[in-house]
Image 1 (cartoon, one colour):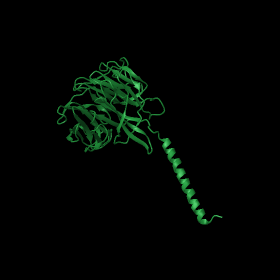
Image 2: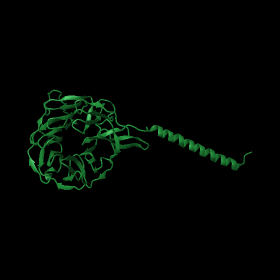
Image 3: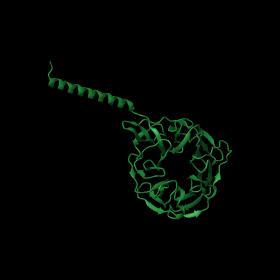
Image 4: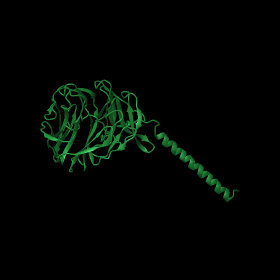
Length: 367
């Protein structure tokens, strides 16, 4: 007959064995649930200096982890370089990432802060010393220009200020913007040392404009016609040519200025391959005459070579939200491949290696 001490020792051994077995089963299940090299779910793309960057999330042991990938081969092969210092989101794309060259780049949350900077291609990131809510970032002429406000919201109820730094440094110079910007929905545009601040009153109305020719040290008011509504997206392709999408209610208007922003002329609504201009439509200029336009309803991506007089649809039934330009021919687009579907969180990638004429769906790289 077994004594009580032997029974106790036997019970301990059995309990330990059962615990180890359960741990092994749990570990094997956890390991099996996470692929060894999962595919990235895209969040934001960027391009510069022959390189493409792709940030997103992937399943990991703790749930979702973030990763930043880089391609120097036109999107055909990818290498993980690090991760963005922001919590990644998928749809809608509320994160932004821009690179000026192969090493220097920035990441931030739209209409928020802070701003992060990298000087090693995305391997490491540092928070800039700027404070407030970030409303715009433009990299041009070797400088980074940023538009800030001390408070958040769709418009700034305190004072806007401009912060400027050489792209290769984190030493910023700040300039207060004129008081007329207070309470306005402001957007920053830049080309070289020329800056524009477009302003719309909260609730909609006529657009006004401030222009600087000295990198933001001084501004003068200038006339601006052809832009109105609740908000506008304006991007410069030179010191004289600007492309815009202005939104008013349930409609939007796509236009272009060739006189430095004083006059915007709408694209013909019935032009060949015309883009449906609705809120959320985006424009991505390539040059003064060439640009991509992304239809917000998911009707596709359109390309113009004649300043918006006519368009060719180069992608069908997708909703493109961001485009990264690595070279004159290698571009990467991201967005929703199934805008009419029930799942609005789907993320897709499309790649072109011939300047936007032909695109192909790109499988997200594995981490």
